[in-house]
Amino acid sequence: MPAGEDTGPADAGKPVEETVELGVELLAHLEGAELSLGDVVDRIETITSDPAITREILDTAEMRGIIEREDGIVRPQSHAYVSFERDVVQREGEFTCRRCNTSISTGYFVKFDAAEHGPFGSSCIRKVTGRE
Image (spheres, rainbow, N blue to C red):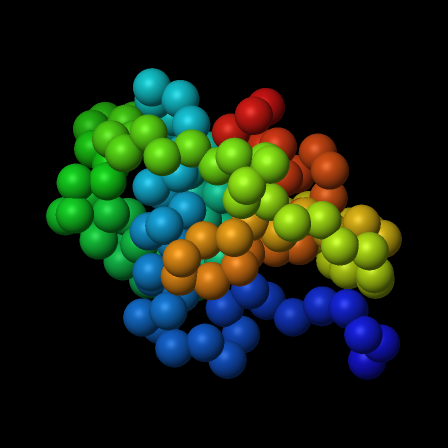
C-alpha cells in the first residue's frame, strides 16, 4: 500500500473503547443548536458502521452531558467547535473519504484528543464539522 493511502474502515482494528471515545469527542464538537438524529448518525458513521457502537457513542455522550436527545432531535451541549485553523490538518496522498468513499488526493483530518479522524474530502469535512 502506498504511503498515505487509507482504505479500511475507521474503526478497523481499534478497541471498542477507543472508537467510542472518538465518537463522543466528535459529538462534543457538533455545531448548531440542534440536529436530527439522522444527521448525527451520518457523522458517527464516519467512525463506525456498527449499530451497537453507534448506540454506545450516543448513550455515552448523553450520559456525560455532551448531548441531549429527545424525539429524534439531538442538542449539543459543549459548543466546542472544530477550528479549521487549529484542529484540521490537510495532507496530500491517495485517500478514500470516510464519509462518501470517494477517492481523494487531498485529505482533511480533524485532530481530536482521542485520535485524528479522517481523511475527508473538501466538502465532506465541512459536513462532518457542521459547516454545511
